[in-house]
Length: 288
Image (cartoon, rainbow, N blue to C red):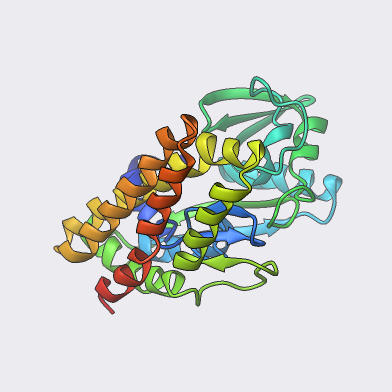
């Protein structure tokens, strides 16, 4: 949305974020099929560099300051805003309060007492009252991020072919997969195979309905898609061994969806235990 007609394919952009390279159990309780300590903010600069783009990062000190910065940035075009609290984006049906879910939007204007934006959840040209938008822009209910963060001035500094982008993103992918890319990780967080084994035990012994909902409504489908896209990207540059491992990861993660919905929790735990060793296998297969 920010790159316009010069945008690489979405799977290439996702690959550049390194989001497919790992798994973690945040604080030992909340699973995500993305790297240990990874957040969209933490990987943003590396992703932009691999893609051949740059942008300006700015943060407001308070709502009034943030709104002034946003208005000034909009003079140069759309502004990337986030993270925001998804549960406070009340234009989305069913959202009535904080749910601890992060999201990003592209603001394209401020008109009167409303903000005009494109929401990638599927809401183009949506309006939200300014006061509601500013409440959502706070990060107190999220696990990461600084309130009133935005980026603007997106500019391509190098035209790169898809294969060049994929290869440029590999060092960051290896760092995240080896659990060396993270900082300020919450206590109790575990990654990769250890996370898969721990989640298998939770599913067998202590799977709450909230955790089941998190998995079947978000984590599983996102994780399976990211791994599948990463496999396709690696195939483009001839890294067939690493691509095959990511394809297996995608299939194992994707298999959890029906098993968890149908409450075949024993089989879901088995799939996670099969997934556990693949992260070390992938690290060994990725080119240095």
